[in-house]
Amino acid sequence: MGATTVATLECAKAFSRIDTIVINALVDEEDGGGPAVAEDFERLNKMLPSALSSRDGAWIWRSPDKARTSFRAIDRTVIEASGFSSLDVAGLAAETGAKNVEFNIATAVSSSRRRGEPKSTEIILELAGESHYGQRLQSRHAVFHPGGAAALTALGTSMIIERLAGLDGPPTQPGLYFPY
Image (tube, rainbow, N blue to C red; front, top):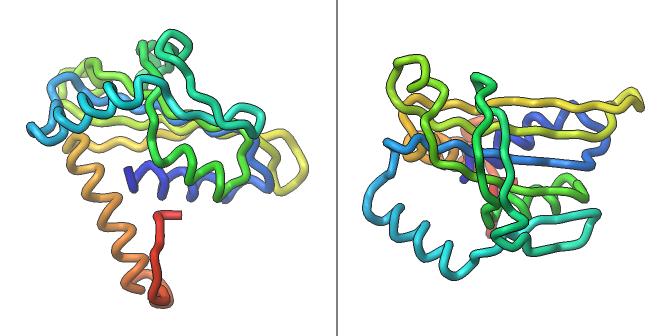
């Protein structure tokens, strides 16, 4: 998801060194997306039942039983999740040098629906490392979109295209690029 990578890299600017990145995504259970999304998730879960992660700089596959975890949603509700193999893991590890990177995903009632509002998608970004002043630094950020997962993905894609087209800085030279 482009929005995940773009947001994480923006949050990473506060660090001189990043040791750990944990991404937790909550997709509202009413935000199933279209048939293509359902098919993609089903295929990914069959092909990659384990979640690619980085631990102490080594690439590992968290098996389904070891990939079970939980996180706090925006409203601090504890959400049960499982590891997910996302391209963000490899890209962010390479770009930031973080030795510990994982992505977890859950389908449940989103924080906005618990407040009686429409469904939303929320991504919680947790980073740990060292500040530019040499002190230990931990941060927690939330990316939230009331339009759901498709709208958040479209926003991330738009931000990446804007960068490549040079609409927010100098034009990007021809080549193959990833969000980072």
